[in-house]
Image (cartoon, rainbow, N blue to C red; front, side):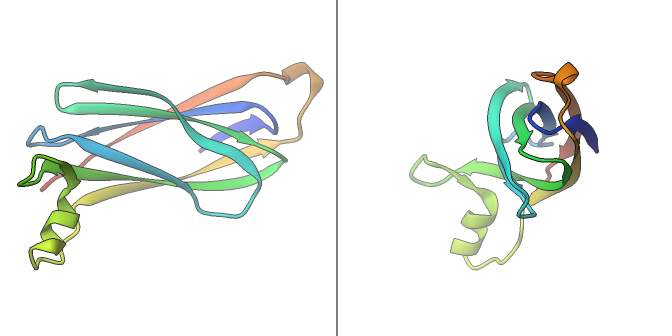
Length: 130
């Protein structure tokens, strides 16, 4: 979890790895209906079999915000296009999933003039396997 002030930017980073070295894809979403800006991708980097992606999130008001990031295992399909492994499996008759997910809260307090424009960060990691 992360604590910031409403109106400030939280930078949230997730690092994922695939044991086969396949590419991964991140899909960020907000679970609740609380007003906020983001998540917006602000950084991504591939380092061998590890991929890190960071998003910026700006809560509009004080409260609890809940987010989810799904990390999908990717492969090159027969036509050379990069596709999610689970989409490829379903297209070939296998209803298997091939992703992992991380759900996390962000807590925003009342904005204060002393912290205007402040930011914070939090990070985590997951491993996506076949």
